[in-house]
Image (cartoon, rainbow, N blue to C red; front, side, top):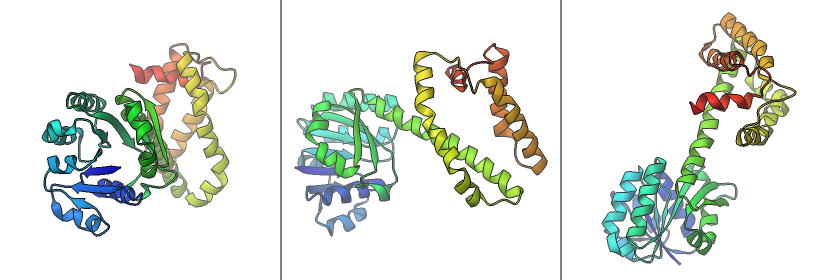
Amino acid sequence: MTVTVLGLGEMGTALALATLATDQQVTVWNRSADKAAPLLAKGAREAATVAAAVAESEVVLVNVKGGGVAAELLREAGAGLAGRTVLNLTDGPAEQAKATAELAAELGADYLHGQIMTIAPAIGSPDAVIFLGGSRAAFDRHEGLLRALGGRARYVSADPTVPVRYGMAVHDIMWGLLNGFLHASALLGKAGLSVGEFSEHAEPSLAGMLSMFPMLATEIDRAEHATPYGALVHHLPSIDDLITESAALGIDVELPNYTRGLVARAIDAGHRDDSYSRLVEHFRR
């Protein structure tokens, strides 16, 4: 199999290196040709134009800055994409992924859209996750390459927008968790406590939070939020304690106050005995 990599930024270079490690023939192209030098030293070929790069390979892997740029490169390749597989690993909104998939189809190419869920140094590792959507036939045909890029590469849908939204959902959760951890770290630090020691002692409790996600997901999918334990009404006193303690230590209270507002409004709306999953309705609005 032959692979062309369009785009040699930090992530594109990592993808090209992981592909070279599988002993595939790799052709690279980048607007700034100097970025190709380290890859050429490892056996890659360089093409002077996008069209020439595409002509060399069965698989065209695209990783550039923005979905609009990726689409421009496909238009530049034009009819040369016919019969090839486009693996677009470029970030961007879901509608851009859909538009690029439609463009690839118009140009006669199979299309897979992927959302990379790791940093560049982890590309090629067994634990690297890549969500993929689009042509199932293309995924099956090139599964070996895909798993060489990320050991946990997985096909999630025929709809190329699904991996994009999966990626956004993971990031959304990540930022919420990180913000909560940093707020807690500030509180602990102001109280003269070690964040490292806290992490060690609280590890079972923190890990238990992740185990709640499947339960919450089931409640949300079924729209069944009533719960015999852990109801919203029981969250409010703990939130109030956190706000009081934060204020006393001079810690920013915007984040816990935001949470309190969500819980209080749901209780006022008659959902005092519901699970925390009930708050999904706030975000849906």
